[in-house]
Each structure stands twice: as structure tokens, then as C-alpha cells.
Length: 252
Image (tube, rainbow, N blue to C red; front, side, top):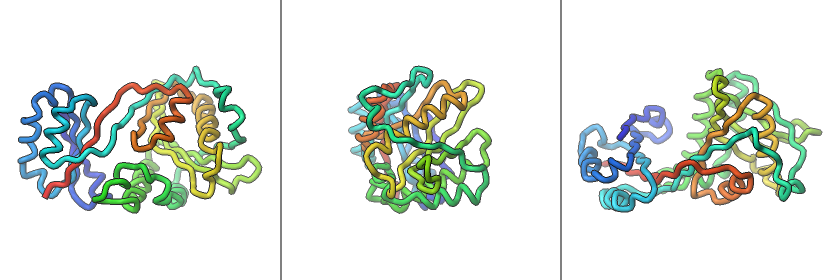
């Protein structure tokens, strides 16, 4: 079992926060996990639990003790070297240009301010009755700005090749140049660009750009609350390497 105090969440959620990760052994001794939360450090805190799927006895025991199910998290892995545009999707692909956003706080902040609550309606914080879409949106903005000083973090804009100011959306990732592993953090389509073909076109342009940057393996995560993206990843052949249940509790 891992217990991490998520200090970065205080400004987002307005309270102390912890992230707890359980393995199968922890799930089979769930009474010890429940007892741990009697510690005073968890008072008035928001606790997120990540646990293996299929451990329903542990899941139900946690729910009996005030935790609520939020989503199944699907962790993905993909060999970028094998990427080709699927023939069945070729007719949907639109021309898209990709450019990296200069690494300075003012420019990144301008992009962060383009993130609107409606862009991430399937996010677990946005869906949670304790918080809602405004807090979920601000959380993403803060996450983006926290990464501006990291040399391995990269923010990209996707736009109309013939009209650079007609911006479709963005991606935010971290590239480990030593291993060639690309960690996909965040991506979204701006509301003004939600027309058929933009999503798959951004995926296609992003993958080609990733390969040109030297990325070999893409690792990311999806939510079961976002079936449209799950379906798109499946169509592109992106494999699920691990699944987790996500629960939360706000302690009094």
C-alpha cells in the first residue's frame, strides 16, 4: 500500500488530499486499510483510492465505509513505431498542423485560459457532486501551468494549416528522451472546433509528430466515463495494459 499526501491538490480542492494505492494483498486485508483511515491525519481530507479491478469484496467494504466509486481507469501503452492511419478512418482525416508552444509562463497561461469547463465533462472531479466542472476545469489549468518549467514537458497546438489562428485543440505530454517513452497527460478539443473528424485528425497528427520527436512508446490513461475516447483508442489499436477502480471519500 502506498499513501501519498497530494499537496498539489490543496489549491484545487480546498482541503488536504491523499492518494492511496492498493495492491491485491491490501485488498485481501481490507479491514486493515479501513482501520488506517481512523488516523487523525485524514480528518477533513479528501482521499482517493486506486485499487485493482475485480476485488469486489474490498470495493464493497470501502463503500460501506463511506468511499464512493468514481470510475475505472484504463492505463494504455502503444508502440508508436507500428502506427499507420487505419484505412477505415482515412476518409475522416482532415489536414492539421502541429506547433509547439514556446516555453514561457505567459504563453502557456494564455492556452490554459482557453480551457473551458465543457471540455472535460467526463473528468472525475468535474463529475463529482462534491466539486463540479468549474473546479475540474481549474484543476487542469493549474496542472498545465505547473509543468511549464519542466524541460521534458511539451505543450502543442493543433490548427488549420491554412489559418494558424483557427486552433482546434491541444495536447500536453512529457517525453523521456532516454527511453523514448512519451507520457500523455492531457489533451482536448476547443468547443469552437467540435466538428466531425477533428478528434481522429488530431490523434493522427499527434502520433506522427510524436514519432518525429523521437518517441517510441506512448503511455497514457483513459476513463470509463469517456466511452468516446475509449472507442477511438480501440479503433487505433491502442492496448489497455492495466485497469484500476478509483474511489474517493471526503472525511469530516
